[in-house]
Image (tube, rainbow, N blue to C red; front, side, top):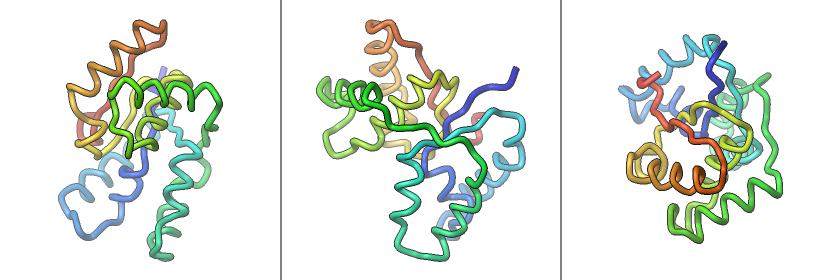
Length: 149
């Protein structure tokens, strides 16, 4: 059975970003193995891509995710994201990061893949997310960077 993975926007953005050649190379290696996983994104991901000001980059990113399942922002996901925010797991300014996690949790993804080390891929935050989820009867989730897969 394939691992179910959710991609945040950073994994898509870094595929063709010349400003970070090391991460771009690691991201492209990850994308070469993408068929090993059951991959999804969300409406949050597509909105963030569509807000990219550079039209050429935006089109590259949209082509990369064409055909991937797009998970919806449900009222339950909004409520869970609010809990992450009100319990200070996430700072108030990163609502979309809280939504990425909530959508991934509620859609039963095994792994959230991100390059966002400040707000997502860090042990302290993951432990807080897991504690709240376990206390609420929700599953835990691994939050990893592309080379960790």
